[in-house]
Amino acid sequence: MRNSEEPTALIIVAVDGTRFSVAALQYAKNYAETQHARLRAISVWSNVNTYSPFMLEWSPLEDANFQLKEASREVFGDDLPAWYEQEVIEGSTAKILIEASRTAELLVVGSRGHGGFAGLFLGSVSTQCAAHAHSPVMIVREHNDLTATPAGTPVVVGHDGSVNGDDALEWALNYAEKVGAPVEVVRTWSIDRIPPQFNEEFGYVPSFDEVTARVRRDLITETAHRVGEHTGTTVTLTAAMSQPAEELIKRSEHARLLVVGSRGRGGFAGLLLGSVSSECAAHAHCPVAVVPKSADAHPDR
Image (cartoon, rainbow, N blue to C red; front, side, top):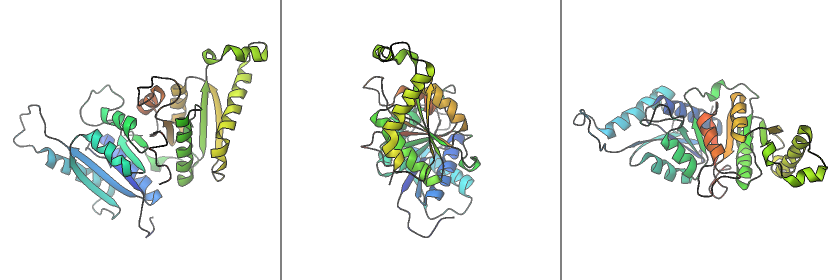
């Protein structure tokens, strides 16, 4: 139930008629209702440059309009709410969505769209949006259902000590506060990344428990300020010996949302989407929110 106040926040969702985009629209609708936000569904069309035997009978514009109307009817029924907008635009799908994200609190996309290869876990549009969008991008799979999430299911966020990790944590805390969910902050470590001076400090090779305790202590110190600003949210801090993507994907099996920064420590400076965020976006079991650097993210809008 929405109140009568004029909604200010804007959520954008991409719709192309696939079952993935219908799932994204359903998820975006449920979230927009809980946040009293406007929801704008965008369907993009372009002229086909390759031959089709149905070229004379088929209009990509009419097709985009039909797909958007059918998806809207499937999710909302025949009566569309005043806070829901539909827009059909000509151009490049990723480019249009990325530009639209400049004024959005959140961009919601399906994990796959039309075209591409069946074996891919993440479509090209989803990948480009996650890498280039100005707002956080939520990637939803066909089976993801916000309404079926049990109460108390946590928002899981990866934090590696980077600036973008702080951005992801801040956004996750704000999101969790809005939906009334607990937060689990996860940091991983691996034996191959323990510096030699760490062994010298102990005078011997530290045990698993000693390293885990130190990692968790650092995590507590580095997140204390942000966590302290959200006293109404239950926060759990977890240190685990594992590879980051592997651990986060495993924990996504029992999460309502997995939140990662678009870039973290390591990797190549030229990459706009880090390997951990890319793997999580492609393989997580729950929806994934990819948060850009703080200069572009809008977690509080």
